[in-house]
Each structure stands twice: as C-alpha cells, then as structure tokens.
Image (cartoon, rainbow, N blue to C red; front, side):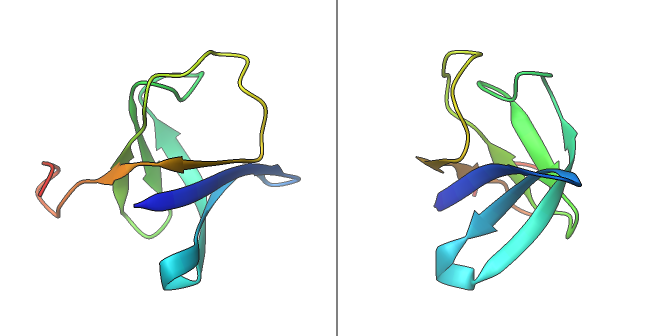
Amino acid sequence: MKIMIRRSPEGLSIYVPKKDLEEKIVESEYETLWGGWIKVANGWVFDLPEMASDTRLPITINAKRRDETGHNP
C-alpha cells in the first residue's frame, strides 16, 4: 500500500491516498522508522522498508499493512 510519511508540527504522520486518510504515527519499533513497524492513531500497523536513517521527509513509499491480529495478511 502506498503511503506518504511527513513531518508536521504535531509530529510524524502518514497519508494514505487511496483511502484519503491522514493519521498521526503514535508508536514505532525504531526511532529512525525504517525497517520496522509503525502504529498510527486509528490502530493500523504498517511494516516499513529498510532505508537510510537520514532519509528526507516527506516521502512516498510502499508499506505492508498488518491485519487486525498484527500479522501481514
């Protein structure tokens, strides 16, 4: 699923164009985001690809959304 990650005054957030959804990132596996999972305010969890820790934002990436049990569907 394509998502855009961007920095806002409130912190990091994602935008999902196909769903016209914007949510704040509330938790992440790693401080640098990349290569781990993120959780957004609506409860969705995404696995992010490996990228350099200094990757500039905003960026559009392909992320895998986990299902409700926390596993990849």
